[in-house]
Length: 84
Image 1 (tube, helix red, strand yellow):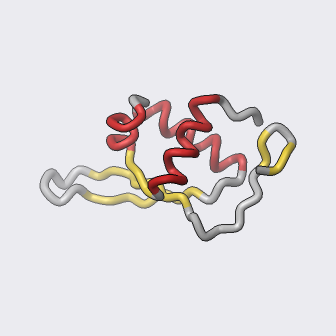
Image 2: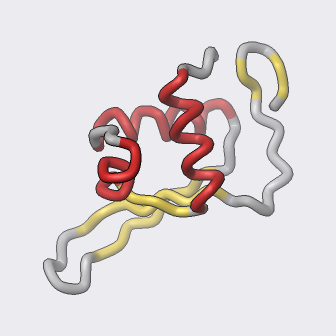
């Protein structure tokens, strides 16, 4: 699978901060929730160690997903037939 510029941006962002949500990605990257979720799915299918955890906002009680990049994983992900 080819990594697009936007997918690379999401990967770099997640590797730099460790965890994020759709809302944080919207504010920090200007990427909407659906597009962000799709980029996360692409990264997971490439083999990157990204997990998701359902959380509940303490004030509103709304549920949301927090994505986490496992920085300790010795990952070998395939992008366009090469390891990164």
